[in-house]
Image (cartoon, rainbow, N blue to C red):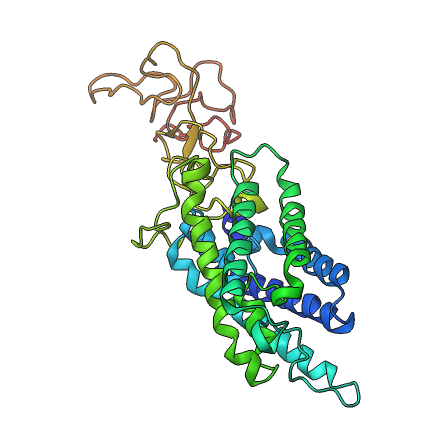
Length: 370
């Protein structure tokens, strides 16, 4: 039980994981765009690789969202309760802003560096490549929806693809999205990525941030709500997710692997309703929990014994029949002398008082009262 509690990700650990992951994504992705002069291959692959690396690094803790749009899609898709959205999004925004500040400060190491318009910020219209605002809006909605459909599909419990390949598919998806849109909008699909460097890139970049916040959230909402309709729910949504704003459980346990993080609280998951209390970490969402029954002596969960004829009084796990005070005590019963031939220190029979499991090495024998 101690190991189970120690392995449970805390709210602080989730916050730290999302902050760190988003920082790495924005710092290295935008940094590659700034230092490579906007090279498509270098920038697209860097954004994709950072998602892969950080998902492998901290995905077991928080699921590796690193993006408020991804968090919204996960909630509406039934994978995450609403009561965790604030923590995730606050961490992601903090990580993006810290990365923007680091890029702003470090690039001043170049003589004559000006941050205005040079922070790998997102853009449209006259301040960018002349791409119309409505087209930029629709493009970012479409790209984010595709991104979320990929994420929800890869992390679907019904997907037979090896769980370890999930971050790779998601990272490649982000890279191909960059290849298709960098010259139009600079590629957002992530409000934290846009806000982080955008607030340091001058007034024009700040004015345009509304589109790169609104469009990714709309795209994520579309994907989260339509994924169960298009591809099936697969299992009951997490309590307090989707269009059910009724809370969820703040203490619900999250198993320690990437895919299970995306299926928090699913029925049958370790530590959730329908699962055995104290089940091993490898028990995955959707697997039936072993039946249990309490130990008659202590009430601790024990594995159910094999089916068979009803146990008779005196057998293991059954109480001894009550003996009236006038009836002589039989050997082996509580308060009676040991059975004939018994040696000092010999273990009492399993099921007798003082030795419910037969594993106390004979140290709980009851001596005849003087």
